[in-house]
Figure 1 (cartoon, rainbow, N blue to C red):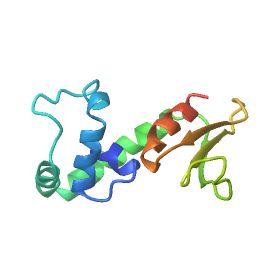
Figure 2: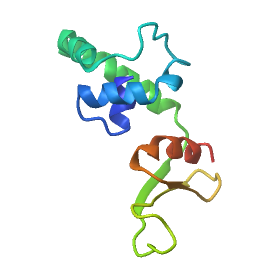
Figure 3: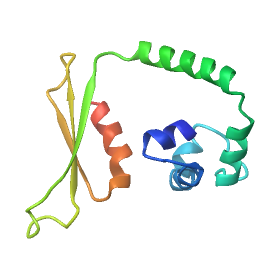
Length: 127
């Protein structure tokens, strides 16, 4: 959960707790959260109790296994659209993806808010 939050822009335990609350419906499909989403105190407590060297070894093994399962590369690029104020709402953003492994040439997703980015990325990765 913390990794997903960080990949979506979380910078501290408060951001991780905010992410867990915002994505509770999705997270409950993956993990039992009988007491609701973890608080920032829970994330802090977990990270304080981790032994650095064993965590480093386990995380390195996880990332190596995860990256080995990936096929090809999807380049993702986000842009804030400017100069179209009369057509699009202010702050409108767009996310674009491009595969280099012979897949579809590309895909785009419109974002109404920067926090919509993870959902748009998932859609682009399915191309």
